[in-house]
Image: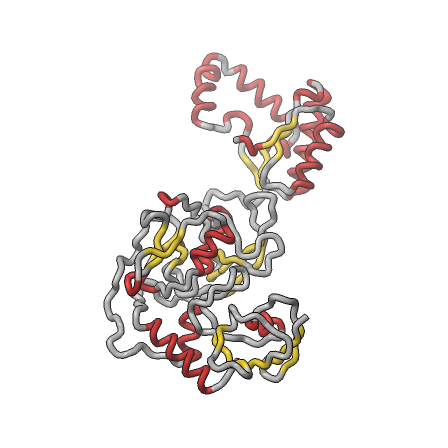
Length: 386
């Protein structure tokens, strides 16, 4: 294992480790924009330059392999000036149209402030590209903020495997483009938002959150949409979710999320969402009253028959009564009792069980055991084919 010294601190790293990765191992932060721990090194922004003893010029830490007895310095006046110049050059072609007030600082903005970088004289004051230039329903595109770090290109290829983004044009006119310079959806984009998650400048952002400001807190949770178990961070403002961000420490998925996990959170605040179990009121009052109500309905004769179809068509509860909120134990006890009554009265095959793709494999396994061993039927299916 190569052993090197970074800022007078000794560290041993596996063969093939870069200087940037070695610095991260011992808690030393080196500025970078094009590099990300989940992506292959690129060496494009030159912000991560370091001084190496014996080397004639500063080196890019993200592509420099650690070598035995290497001595590295990550901070000096010369390095600070170099990074400030790099950021000033990037600012000269960067333009913020101001459509996202009070937004969280991007990585680019944080490094600009920390390095005290200013745009060069003659910097671009107008937009070069149309703001919101792609009709994708989830990803906001503003190429005026793009610094050509290619994180989006690598994230789409290496994390999501879709190969939607690429570099288009030459020289000053180089820009990122989807597919053959077409709309993202036409280029087979799945709207997973990986490109927006990895973008350090806000050139690619989450459309649903673009004007909602800064969150008050982040809550790490597990996605509810399937049984994979992806973790994500809910960005909460007040009592509402305003954005979902990737959690790089998630053991299953890392930075990766699908379109449902990243953008399908608005159901949480939907007014029709049920937050507690409900049962029919007659189930709480006993079967006797329900049977009496059923007799009265039959005694109504033709009128009841005449309106029955309308009730079913309109979704009316009819003589089954109203829904009542109960606790989980009550709801589960009633469900268990009614299943047992149906099985005992009509046989086990009168019951069917439908499992869910949103459950864990272990939970679906238990549903299989429940159907076959507890109920005694082979009538079990799964929703995935729908």
